[in-house]
Length: 110
Image (tube, rainbow, N blue to C red):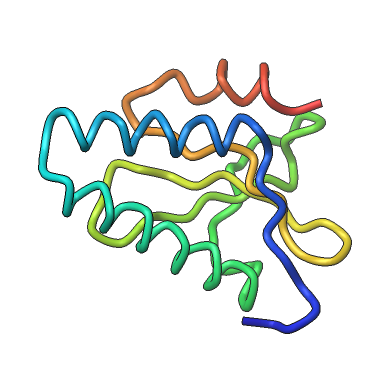
C-alpha cells in the first residue's frame, strides 16, 4: 500500500459492508462473511496503490464524473464505488449490482 495514502470510507460504505456481512452470516457461511471482509480490504488496498484501476462510471453530470467502480474478488456482483481525493481515495458505496445504483449514488454524493 502507498504509505501516505489512505482509504476514507463514507458512513454509507461502512453501513453497506456491515449489511453485506450480516447477509452472508445469515444466508451463507461465516467463512463467506470473513472472506468478503478480507477481499474488500484487499480491493481497497489495490485501489489505493492504483487509483485509476477502476473504470469510470461514464456519468458526465456533476458530481459523478470522477466516480470509478471496482470489484471485490470472489464476489462478482459486489461493486466498490470510489473516487480519488487528497491523500488517498474515498470509498463512497459498496453495492450489489442488482440495486438501483444511479438512485443510490445520487443520494450518496454531494
